[in-house]
Length: 99
Image (cartoon, rainbow, N blue to C red; front, side, top):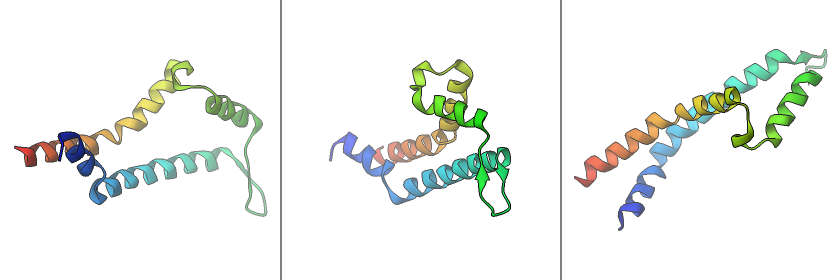
């Protein structure tokens, strides 16, 4: 098995996928709390997103990362940094096994 295949095997293992999925769920839940806090709740339980946020988020959706303002790029980088410790640890574990 090649080094690349072994790295892929470690990174795609259930243990690593579950750790990354847990981080993704936390990130998603944080985002949903943010969205819900900024929406108007109706009596029927539905949420209405204010038009200024709709416009902002639609602009962000349509904008490639490289064209985002620096502050928005930094926000995306901060989110990715939550995943890096798991990836780094997995690669360190792989390296230890390979030694």
